[in-house]
Image (cartoon, rainbow, N blue to C red; front, side, top):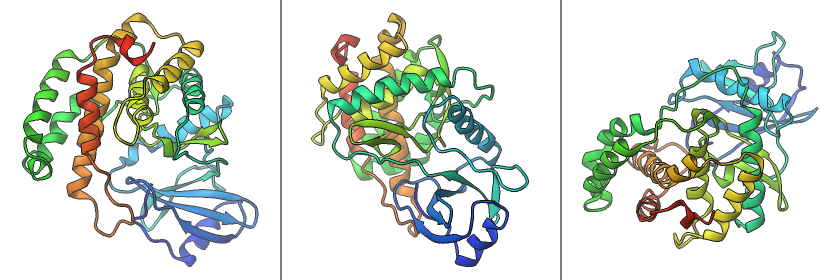
Length: 319
């Protein structure tokens, strides 16, 4: 989340005329994230979040994201619920851009990751995977192994400006992962961006998941591989095997992990690290200067990629 499209008082007032959610009291920019423009929207009835979808979001894919949140909410999985307007549509327009208003999810992301958070995370990611198992829409993961090379070549000539030898190392990893990427693991709907700022807690208890705008159909264990990268490394980039064990074991209790999935985990974790290394590299060199958010350091994911490349057996992740 970030803010690229500035919304005036009159524009938000005009938008709300199409909804039955009251009159605007406050519209406050949300500065975190990099993809879309987001605002806390408070009306005289309740609190919501307004999301304006920016250029990197394919408008034709918005029904997938909106439908997925509606599907999960109906299944009792806690996530924002898109609000429909007076015409019954969950999507509207503002400044010519598609937008949606969703319910406010109470809780907050955590900056201090504890073992209890990993237990809650693993259990509830499995719940989410099961709840989405009968979601009828499909969306290909356009940030998986088949797309990384194209993304890399957009910033290949700039990479060594950040770190000498980076382009060669990335190219080598691309070749290895393309040759070894699994092809037959259990697939379904994944969130694909389960970072600590997208998972809400009240205290140590899970409260819900937000920001489904990378969700897609892919290997379920790829979601867990992303979590290993995002939740199980300390600030000094040291891997915390206890946290990984909590994540994997609690997930396994709800949706048992197959031996084939476990065997593929080091490759999937390397791929997840490379995916975020590449997207952060791209953002490092291409983020809009007017955005309130600053691009994140790509190199921490280089260190995580190197760690996963050194894993020989899944047992080294603690399960």
